[in-house]
Length: 115
Length: 115
Image (tube, rainbow over all chains, first blue to last red; front, side):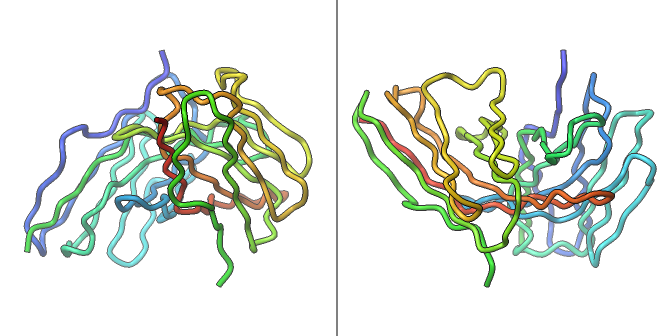
């Protein structure tokens, strides 16, 4: 069956440390993988996109890796801050998914950064 | 600021009483999506419009309908809400263009409660 799995347990880390979140998928062939941030009671906000032929993407304190052999993406936040506390969702855009940018979302990982 | 606006933020309806949720956008995006998100679950795509073309997901119940009278507005109609339809409903938009890929922009959702 097709699945997207993210850490179901909340991730608690200390301020200033690097947070690493995992997204694993099975039986999908994504052309792109995206990461979104979702705060309680709010809609998801786009953070980063990585293509299937890219290994790594960076934006300020954020870094995403994409390994299509392992079927895994890692999302890193360096020098984490309490303001980074939120749920982080990974989403797949499938190859052959049509021209309408349809996404399939994971359930998300709740990150809590302690001061 | 250009954005995706959902009204109302909170909606309470009675079991079986039709309800309409609305979404408007100032981004002039050609694709609009409706998602259902239940607590601690992934956003689940219900349907989307590519311009005026309606695309229903295979597992979206017939109870859910949508209308897009113009580029800026899209509505979600739930004809006979059941207790299982209580959820956050998210609207998102995206611009589909040749040779490029754009992420999705979300509104802050409407939380629907069923009495």
